[in-house]
Image (tube, rainbow over all chains, first blue to last red; front, side, top):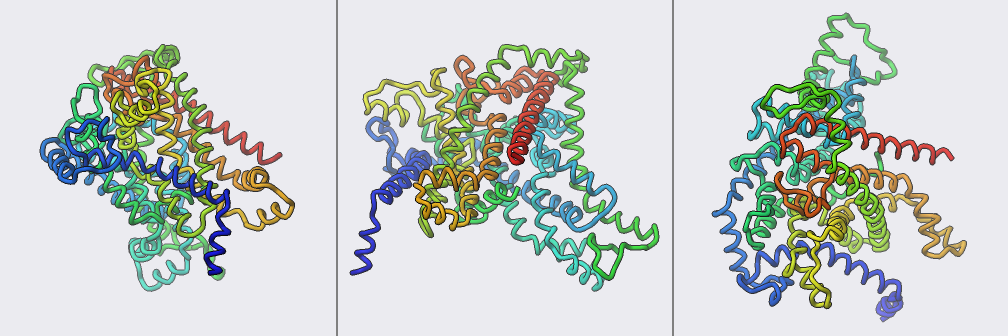
Length: 284
Length: 314
């Protein structure tokens, strides 16, 4: 009884306003995504004025849409390309970045400070400046419309190096020393000590790289201009082009399929994603 | 044998022979090599060669022709780049203050929920950030569609006429800012929220004992305490706003033949640069454009940094 009473006394105008605002904003934030979902699962042929797509109306129509997009457009291939592009980029960024970070964080050798400063300086240079010259280098290598053209130029991630170096600095030298006395080689120190101890940082970097690569629009746009190497973002973008007569349900089906990996990732790794981004602001 | 960076108390720097020393650093460089080679090949070299090309007229097919500063003159003098710069100024002036204020509002709101609901609202507000920008742009493009788009249906029910969100030069910029705020609010909120959580609770208690109102608490406790985080969020939003590309590209024609929309109302510098490079194949000109952009962005970033330093001293 007293508990109930206390609950009632907590309802003040302020808390009502607070909840109303929070729920309204939540609605605004989720609505466009919810709408996309409803367009895919809508009874076909019913005009928007009669069914404004505020809720899903037909499961079978949605499944039909998905089947159609996967079989009749180049979407399935684009999906493979995007997955390969993302997975290879994550693997490369983590491996190459952690190897370099291991050296910068734990050893001192001639040139280390200058090289590190040079890489950090590159964080200041906007992507806009490097985009066209990097494209020209890729073109010169004959890597246009190839997977290595998509992946390789993005592997030396200055942000990743910074993050991993900061993290590895906390690895105690005593541990390396002990392993070395046991006869570990330089590479073994990296592989069996530094890498396992940096698991949290590696996971965060992997997730952030995933989000960035899956959503990357401008780089695939210039590198893969042939349909054989289109990524998901390009197929979606083509649907938007003025002369494409793609209907809204096809576009939204492609959108929905492209949204699934990041949404699933977010559901699983919420904490790491949010904390990874939060710490980039408060520590940096 | 390799030695640690920070030698233990009993052990000084190695007095080993030169050969030993060389063998030691060889491994350091070997592990570093993949990163540094890629960094050199796909960052340093492109920047330097791009700088050279910015003085040439080049379409990647014919031999480059040296033209001196002509590319830079074209970039600074052409009508399109002036339109793009004007659009950018208007866009940055609206989207940065609005976006950061909304994010701050959201952070304050979420901060007032404890436990599960705090985490719940934080996650829900963050969902748009998770969506790739190209998806967000495509969804909104259809929500904005004339006649049967969701927003025009809504306008119809409210008795307003058909609004051409993406086709009326007076409205287009605001339509884009709305998408932008929707996408970025959650991102900035998460960073600000982390800053809010770091403010010791007894500061608020002290303010409350002194009879401060909620508003006074925000102005005199929250804002000063959160200032470094706030500056980070503002500079980050500012720098990314200067490079806006995906959103206006996808909200307008989304092809190198058609971009920027009606009366070029959504033409922005990076788009203009891309169009000159890949649309009209003037790569020398596009490189020059890139360097002008970089110069402006680095200058503005430095200005923010200096202002902030001066502010911190007073």
